[in-house]
Image (cartoon, rainbow, N blue to C red):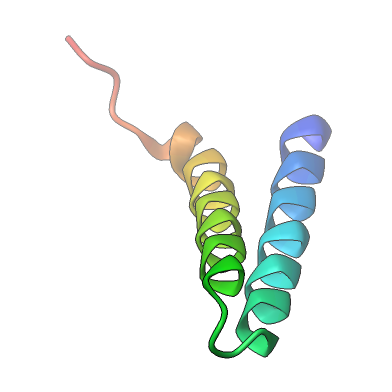
Length: 58
């Protein structure tokens, strides 16, 4: 459990940092790419959070 929480925190902080940093690069394509990478990290943190609540497949 602590490893999962640490990974979620790392992915969340890195994702938010990249989204904010990419947002400051207005008008540049590299800013958009950085924001997309940040979004992928945020979605990964959400995936890690929701993993224990999934129904087992039968």
